[in-house]
Image 1 (cartoon, rainbow, N blue to C red):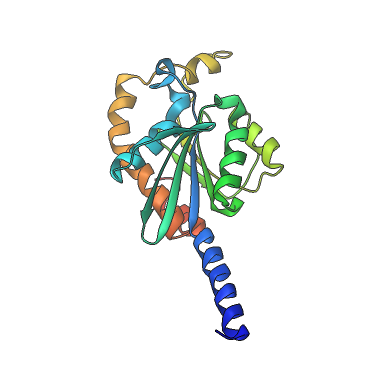
Image 2: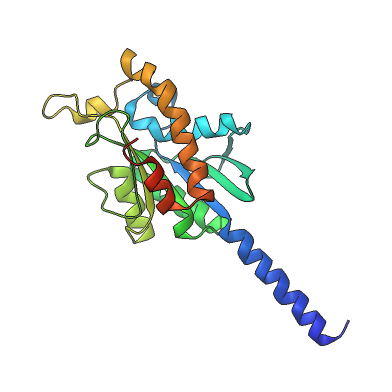
Length: 209
């Protein structure tokens, strides 16, 4: 092998690696660990990535700072993360897994509950403030930026003044559980669309649905 071929091979390997990394996506569902939080509104992020994992026949394994599962779909690799740091320290897990998997910030999507949206309303944004959400606030601090995509799932604001914490840490009511049967599969489609069609197209297709 001559030197030209040698360097072409070397640079080719690097190019392929870079391309592969650009096709890798980190999907973070925010929530709190433990059975007592499993069916609470604040854990909708966990619930959505669980739905994605089930649809793609993968299971979560307990790893450093979270439960992780991964699958390939249409040439893309999706890494699903449920941080085990509790909601208010989510940024530590996000930063660790971004670095470990070498995933660019434009390829992460954070899923969270939002009391400012009616129940079941879907809102994707390319960036923005934490909006009072402690999980997003910690991610913003650890990444030192607001420039990351987030998927807000509306849980409504059906609570008296001063009772927001009790509401989001409360369990779904019967009507909400019934509607989640439809909303969760739609949410799962958003995840794969984000990786295959891009954020802008996914926003156009799903926002407000």
